[in-house]
Length: 138
Image 1 (cartoon, rainbow, N blue to C red):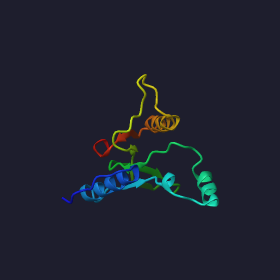
Image 2: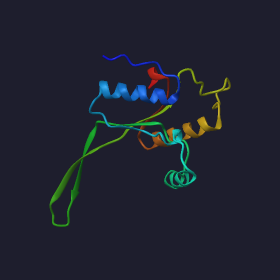
Image 3: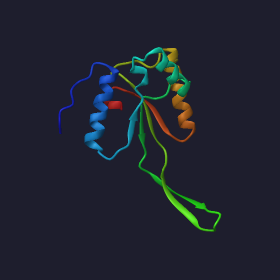
Image 4: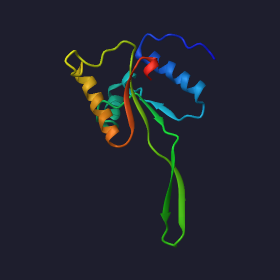
């Protein structure tokens, strides 16, 4: 297996995780949300804000391989059976060593609290959704 270089920032960690997924699971479907890392013009930022008005969306989504059969009865009396993917995993990625909580157990920053709230909403909808600190937790 190819050696994966060390990372120094969250974005480099994204690249390391992407290479790992490509090598270990070549058929996996995943997507990184890199919008926060982009330098956008004011017009682009306004468009992005209209499309994604809420903050805290996780950095990585991995589509789950579990499939379900969905049966639809058509007006003609025929049944249509489709195989559809169900669920997935969301990971909010943090660089190695980053602390999420204070000593009292509260979230370290308002931004991390927003991210934790988004993860909780995803869990309530049946997704696996977690923080991952460093490569080994992701």
